[in-house]
Length: 270
Image (cartoon, rainbow, N blue to C red; front, side, top):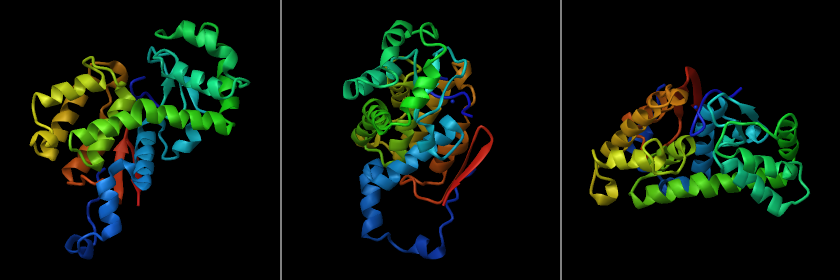
């Protein structure tokens, strides 16, 4: 079951490539993937797995379409592939999009209640049937597509676009995306915009002539500071025993193999 995480709440990188890899320039396909960053489908899939390890304690992000529970973080129900929340507006936007595309869906009748509880942790009007309706909707390709589209519109695309403008490579794009998922795309001190603003006080982005590793370290410092301001975010292992480890290994292209820990659980992508 997912544990406390993200805007709603939730060992090391093995950089030891073989000797040949350390002494041989990457081929054209590898160079193209690195240049593409998270726009490369394989790198995007990797990002989805990394986020899922923190959000859902599993690398299988596609199994999370049907996930729904109240994790007690003050944001109502948390559900789906990036933890859409009934109290933070993104769940409402998702169900509205789904209903625009398919008016006769299991969640359409819940829209008035979702609008009423937006901004609160209330379940009023949603219980007892909402979780079952969510799981029923998750069986449909239309709802799964809506979840992916809203994930990209609200979190993934803005994070990657901002990272590219800041001159960041694949790891930096992922760092931004994970922060966007957990903290939301707002501008207050504990949202993505506020975290980036604090990081800029300590380091320049590569686009402004700064060193990429130095800037990302400053961003992670700012994120940890923001996380510790909320009890729900107080476990900072998704930064310290995952992203920070990748950065320390100099893996700015987020190349596999990867090994990391989140909340004490170990993960590996070969």
